[in-house]
Image (spheres, rainbow, N blue to C red):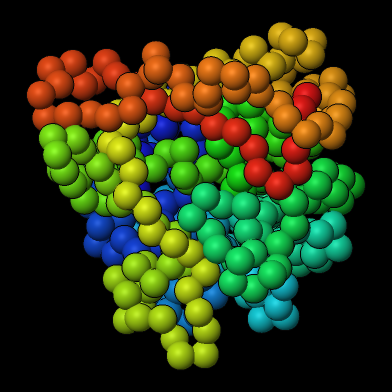
Length: 319
């Protein structure tokens, strides 16, 4: 959301704005948030309508990034769309995905993409693996795709699968240049979604962009030829995002001190992955009671409360 971008840009974190804002909303927001523009991307699909909308936004707003975002990057149509976008915007940084194999990463980079989004199925509200049987363990995908991209001077974004600060460190250790997360940022003050009150506690709905909720809201329903590949959940309201960001960045900094890395670029050189069956001692459970789980209407210090914890899916590894 624009609200999320406003906050994240102040600490130089990047936001791919969802593609359902109108051209007029982009123009209005950018007029008063010019300093945030260098930290945002326009998200787009591959239809002619999507291309026209991107063109109209860029005619009025100076956004340096375009994110070509589809669930399945394995199509000739998508590759051709990346090529056409590069021809139309030779000086704009293009993000494209999602894919999970080195061969497709190379194809997209040679076609004109600068950053490749890696991940099929690991997201917290993604049901692609359940609905289709298609997917790839996220850590393995990042290891393979980063190697392929860096060999051609490209970059990768690890997209999905993060459940705690340590997962960000693992993604960077596997070679990711950027890490994208949605679920960990959901249900915050800056997140989209209506605030719901139940039994004195506050909640927000969070849903995948391939869920029936999203398609009913933005696309007129789920097409007859396909099924929904996302789910909707209701999460406890977590308040301002800054507390979660502080928790994540603190974990990454501590990772670097443990492994002797002076910066993120050095982290892969200092990382060894070991397959394990369990990472965390859960003798007293996995919930950290020092971090509040709910906001209530009676809270008078809501701006001071922070949330943020996570664990890994798929590959069970540790740094």
